[in-house]
Image (cartoon, rainbow over all chains, first blue to last red; front, side, top):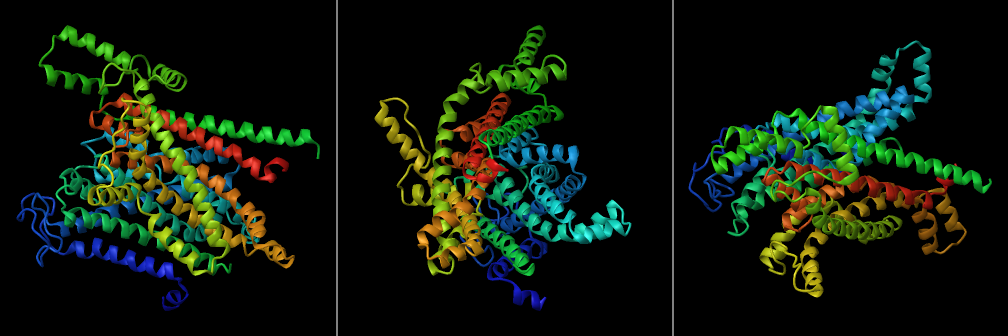
Length: 278
Length: 339
């Protein structure tokens, strides 16, 4: 661990620290007992920031600090579910395409390329507007995951293609290992380091998509997410009434979270390429 | 190698690329045809429900007739296969998506036609500008990557690029429209009252959306071009060019740029879908009268025909734009022409 930190570059370090802070807020602070921040009129309306309410309260008497903590928690959870499904499916499809070759490979790649190029937001809009009112967090995550697998599968396929012809794979074939065993013991370790960066990328993309849908009013209405929190503040005219303590925190949190994750991704990729000796 | 052989290779590339283009559109449209049909909600029943809630109970015979008319207009008559084929034929060949619900009975296609040019104009200008500016700055920064100015530039780009489109738009709106009061909060374009007035209101309405799209686009091209050209600048052939005593500008232009721009053209083609999603969000924040705002209106009024129409047209538009960018590719990459 100490050695890792010494070799890590600046971006990776900043990325890790920012991401850890968000994980701490979203999964540790989140578990401190608190009043359900969603219910209206728990406290006075439009209270200014104080010790009891670090960011004050909304026009509906909700505590902004705890709204923010719940929003960070839910946004991260959605991001992780989507990234997990996307990465697992992507690795599977990519390995399958890369190793089977021939027609299966071509068909899989045409579908994958379609999903990479197609603008995802309009299709997400179509699906979420059809299930408006009945959408749950899990359903939302599943829908978002439909667009999360294509990019990793493309990358894993090219990785598989480049590894397939290397000596140690041939050695494994000749020593009698089956296809599944070769994939699991020889290829997967390579694919995993790559998948980690894909995973973080997909988390970022999923949180962005969810908040975009929230601004369109298409995220589940009872879900406290970063996007919904911004949207609620916008709907209740927090900009016109200059309640910066309401609309400000979710915007600043989203910006910091995204920059942090992005630094983590690019820093991690640089770290990997440095480790490979380039 | 004879010229005939070269052309054969190029036509093969062209043929494959056009095939992929058609497949992309087909898969996309098939997807959006079948997905709504997997959901339990029925647009005709929704519509009838809304009419009933507005005008009270209806005569059963009349209602049955209405239901039948609506089913035909929504393309829900006949077997699934018939519906699918007529959707493909009407939607893709004639851009006919039936009547719009929010401004019944104007056809969806007519309404989209008035909104689409604004989105295309905004996207085209900002995407091309962002690509040119970003790659120019990125090349300078990557070529001289140890300078302080390059590092500062990259840091700024890194802090802007990962932020979602609508957040950047929202921040610009708060700062420039609300606090500084330089622009109106919601953009309006005046179509009546002469051409000069129209252009003036168009520019006024487009500046903030364009700036937010430019900021994010340029940020990405700076980051990617810097790392690309930074790698190319350390290749042996660049070192050799230096030993030959070639001027730095020539090395930058014909060695580093020529080798890294090829990747950036592919990346441009791949990024268009994302840029489109982003411009939808930006339009909505500023109320810019493009397809994004139209989609938002359609969602608010549950106008499925309109949503379907906007989505089909955007899939066709984005795939075609990607195809055009990909066709530029063989012009700048000699390997495609020869290999």
